[in-house]
Length: 344
Image 1 (tube, rainbow, N blue to C red):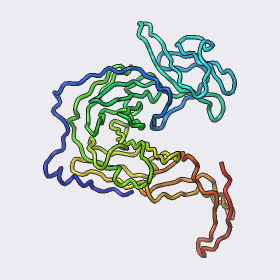
Image 2 (spheres, rainbow, N blue to C red):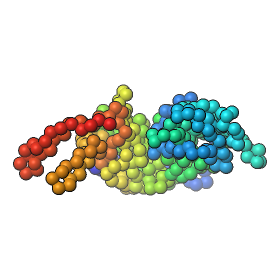
Image 3 (cartoon, rainbow, N blue to C red):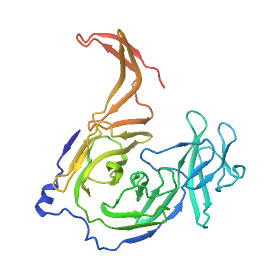
Image 4 (cartoon, one colour):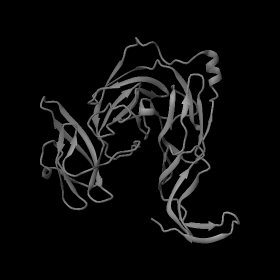
């Protein structure tokens, strides 16, 4: 990985400007959040979770009964405690669920349901809480599916028109401005105020070499206390000091897409005195998984593809992996065998 001191740091050191926002006595702004369920799912959630359906679906204290109709359809009760026969038949749909606590508090949620790769069905959270911060739409996601919207480093949050959702952390970035942020468990209210902690600069876009749209680039500190989608930034941007790692990224060029994981990428340390410039997204190279046993060589069609920053590319659409291989003598470079790998 190529990591450099970011260019603006010298000027920042000279001016002594390391803090963002006013002192801690600044009042919090409060925003009401509303439940939403999109018609189509286009959000990019880091390490999106899917849960097997082996009976009722439990979300917090609420239970939603299910009944498989056939191999491609399943009935889900849309009211907690209700009969699945009164539900709807789904296959890849977004379902709106509702319930009510013993105290009369209403619960609104949404899920996606699909067929599982090994048979049966699975579900993933699709409920969103939306509001507006500094004129920008903010969306909260119950990423871990427990009905709570403020799990640090577990739930997710997106700002504006970005497809990418960062992990929910203690600080929110809106138009490259930083804010302390708090949310209640039910996702009804969000509070924020200008961030007043120490900051440094990070640049993850200037030296991204792939000729594709970077639709999500989530960088987080350990545990997800600080997590930001930097895909829409241009050059240097200020973040709270800390050591950041790539949590998730997504690139697209037309119908060609790929996800990006940290892979071998090193941490990106950001301090008030020294920022970070990341070079990645070029010099992609594939390494096949090769096993040797005596005179026998086994080549798996599974490749690991890395970029120059150590990042790993996976889940390509369409599959770009090469089908041809050669085996050469390491000393003489003589070709011993040439063949094709099976597809799929």
